[in-house]
Amino acid sequence: MKIIILNGSPKGEDSITLQYCLYAKRIIKDHEFSSYNISSRIKVLENNSAKMQELLEAISNSDGIIWSFPVYHLLVPAQYKRFIELVFENKEFIKAFSGKHAVSISSSAHFYDNLAHKYIHGISEDLGMLFHGSLSAEMEDLLNVDFRKNLITFFNSYIEESLAKTPIPKRFNPVVKRYNDYVPSKNIKESEKGKHSVLVVTDSSENDVSLNNMINVFKKKFPGKTEIVNLNSIDIRGGCLGCCRCGYDGTCIYKDKLSSFFDGCLRSYDLIVFALSIKDRYFSSAWKYLWDRSFYHGHRPVLDGKHYLYLISGPLRDLPDVIDEIYARAEIANSDISGIVTDEYDDSDTITKMIEAQCIKLIKNADSEYIPTPTFLGIGGAKVLRDLVYGLKGIFREDDIYYTAKGLYDFPQKKWKNRAFNIFVKVINHIPVLRKKIYENAVKEMVKPHKNIVENC
Ligand SMILES: Cc1cc2nc3c(=O)[nH]c(=O)nc-3n(C[C@H](O)[C@H](O)[C@H](O)COP(=O)(O)O)c2cc1C
View 1 (cartoon, rainbow, N blue to C red):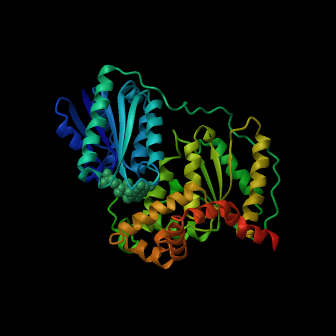
View 2: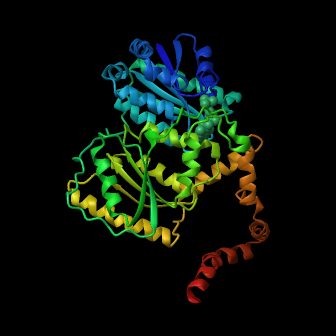
View 3: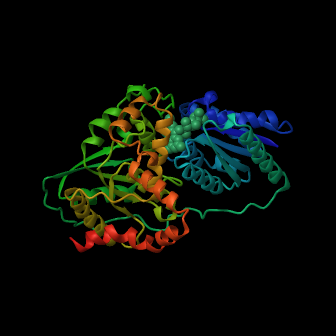
């Protein structure tokens, strides 16, 4: 079998993830593996059609594809996302991928790696590929003998299934635009302007009729000042390189305008609207470049306390993982999403009314400093980040200073009262009479402090 590894790491040959594939290549000798650096050469692929053609031919002549990538900001790196966009822009490319056997492999800290793999799985199915499975490794897993055995089993079964033409079930429905563009009525009245100001960040182009209309209606209806920034107009020279040099003091090696936008503009607003279009199974790579590059802030929730409204054009309801991603990022940063309005309605008036209602809600939430309590998305995510930063505090020095100062190293073993309680209960649990009493009273004792609050308020 001829297999092509599409290396999504901006580190190119120095990618950790790529080593997992190269290990498999060395062990599995009966098959031909070749690798292409995608993310580290994205500018070349974008601007040099001969190089793109070369890759197209290699893909056409292969039997299988390995999507190999690091997880970046809850998805694949922006450069890889951009590559996927280029693929969908070119019919020949879609044809080349169609019918090929695919697997995905990543390395990460397991922070929302599931979303990245589901994204690639969905993309593979959209391209008409047969998707055989994904393997999500930790950064250090290759150093472990048992893991290496698993890795080879994974690749062998991919090859065996591909050769045997084993039927492969599909997991996702296609993402379909079901609604017409949002075209609001011409005589929308402007709201009176008050003291609030809001930043609208968008990646829209002239062709995004619906999204531009949503932004315009929002601007009319928002009772305050609106600043609009288009991500495509900011001087962003490239995607995060994964060099981690920012870990020491929070300084990015790029000398472009990303950080002045992020710190000087985005962070200065409490009310922020993100106006975005769905592109394939996520938002645009321009959006992804922004978040990957914000890595110079490490794992610090630097946008805490913000209030967001999302205006989205495209079939978001087909993409529950993207909805989860939106909430995950907000919850981890202890911020609030006042609403998400999409253009998935038959009737434009409904959308206009929703935008108007959301203007009020955004202001109300900000005025009352309302921050919703996090769900598993935020709580689970924060714990993974806490453990990661603690384990790598030498590299992520700036994070360590922040986590220490903010008390974010809230490991359970530091909760002394809780530990004392558990030791006590563990001991007396050995005595059957006392154990019976403890469990008899457990429900009542647990709710007692809550009842006290209710009764004495
Ligand atoms: C900009 C950036 C964003 C990252 N985001 C995530 C993430 O969301 N989840 C995660 O588990 N790891 C994340 N990581 C860690 C990488 O996935 C991890 O270091 C990976 O092993 C790098 O693989 P590579 O050497 O193949 O590029 C991020 C790293 C960088 C530099």
